[in-house]
Image (cartoon, rainbow over all chains, first blue to last red; front, top):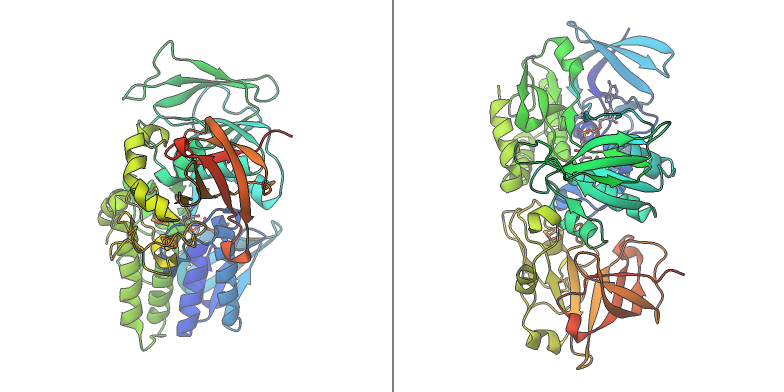
Length: 360
Length: 163
Ligand SMILES: Cc1cc2nc3c(=O)[nH]c(=O)nc-3n(C[C@H](O)[C@H](O)[C@H](O)COP(=O)(O)OP(=O)(O)OC[C@H]3O[C@@H](n4cnc5c(N)ncnc54)[C@H](O)[C@@H]3O)c2cc1C
Ligand code: SF4
Ligand code: SF4
């Protein structure tokens, strides 16, 4: 069985930054990534990101992945990246079982582990929601931006959070018609600058609306939409039919962290962080010493905060292994300050509340 | 209304415009950013310090119309595509707009396009004067258009005529 110092599961912005941070302190790192390419969500993001300079704001997500991978190369002798490798089990003795290329199965034992597995998409229940043509927003983005495939011709977007609004904009850029973006909430969840970008392209954003049903025999042919009241109950007589061949569901993400639960880390449901999350210290360490969490796996936020958390978790995990850089405390405070800044505004209210509830 | 549709009201829009006298003096940035979000590339990008967000990255940017020379560096840097340049110094009947435009195919100088408002509805005709897309804009082209002055507070986007 292979033994490593620090194992990082997931190579999204959180995992990559954790690796860079730990390796720069001197730790030897192995990263497992289930996909054929590193970068997590970043590789699908063709729009410019928010945040500040230290999180590469105004760079496009896909280019941020490139920047981080270049930094990773600087520590090539200390960081190994294994692609097509899914961590499928996590046991008491810190053994992680791995499935490679869906055929080879092996074990890795690690002194310290950072779980940076990201998130999964929530789905929505309505009649016929299993018709071909009804996708999650992630699938639409992957088809379009990773493989260059048109998901369809006319799209109804369900969900006006950042993801729904951004994916709608990217659909327009790909020359695909977006008939409307709807959301059951009375207000747009996305940053309003993103929403305005879409509005001035003539795409209506319908707040307080939901899907009543999908219509089609072999695949999606139309969607029936209706208004909902403040308790999200459909208002009779408000039905509208849209003839569409794609419905894109973008109703939020949940943290993906079953591996930590399997290991026995203390978990808690925190609505503000969008699901079940591990309790952790301010250094991103879970209830089991030496096991850390960073990024969306610890609560749904943004790539900017995932990067800062990754740097923090990597720094602290390496320090626990004995690699304490001279500027440890300075760097720790710097990452914490970045996180505080990103979470300080009104859109960070929810996150701050969630953080309080999930502190060890 | 704005929070339901993403379409800013006339009052909100006007609050972000400098006085017409300033617009008539020469190019100036209009920063349509109304919500506290953790973002500040506009401040970082401005070479003369005309956009201020301050220590709290969530603050709403403030543009100093006296300091701003309308250079346009911030236009392609804003991830929200919330900034445009207006210039009323060129003619008494028209205003020039410089707006970010991330769609292909790009228009060409001399072309007449359909001017759209903040709801994407056609409001006027607009003439394309220039299309800038240098590497430093990082794939956010900026298009200069000439529009009838009447539409100063309406015009915000454009659509190419179907070929
Ligand atoms: C449409 C869209 C637009 C966005 N726009 C912005 C934006 O403008 N600004 C911003 O800051 N953020 C934005 N985000 C959010 C940002 O992309 C995420 O918050 C960020 O990617 C989270 O980083 P992460 O590293 O935690 O997770 P991810 O990026 O999801 O990476 C997790 C990685 O772990 C891998 N993995 C999962 N499970 C396993 C396993 N068992 N074994 C091995 N590997 C595994 C996955 O394959 C993936 O590569 C956007 C997201 C979307 C979807
Ligand atoms: S136009 Fe130029 S001077 Fe004016 S705010 Fe933008 S970057 Fe600064
Ligand atoms: S860069 Fe754009 S979206 Fe960000 S704060 Fe400045 S104006 Fe607002």
